[in-house]
Length: 79
Image (cartoon, rainbow, N blue to C red; front, side):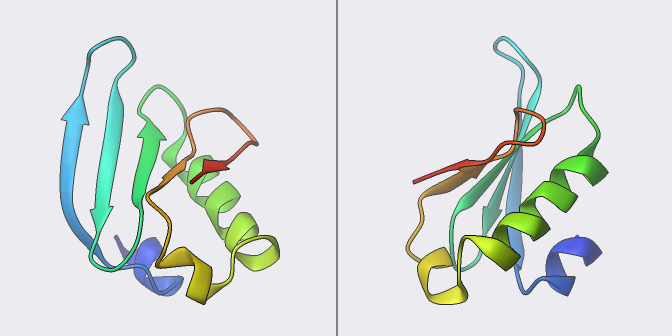
């Protein structure tokens, strides 16, 4: 949660799902759901998120997104 605050994302609620792969959905206060794979390093997924926010998604666009999927290593899918 501290890492998220460092990049101006405020987490609201969390949801764990296990249908298939274990997944953590982080519902943010003003923006997309962040989707993490619990079988992979959360730290690595956060670093991928930070790099994506620095290079591909600006703050005004972030608030309009529905989700950011970080489950695949070194890749980010968002809508």
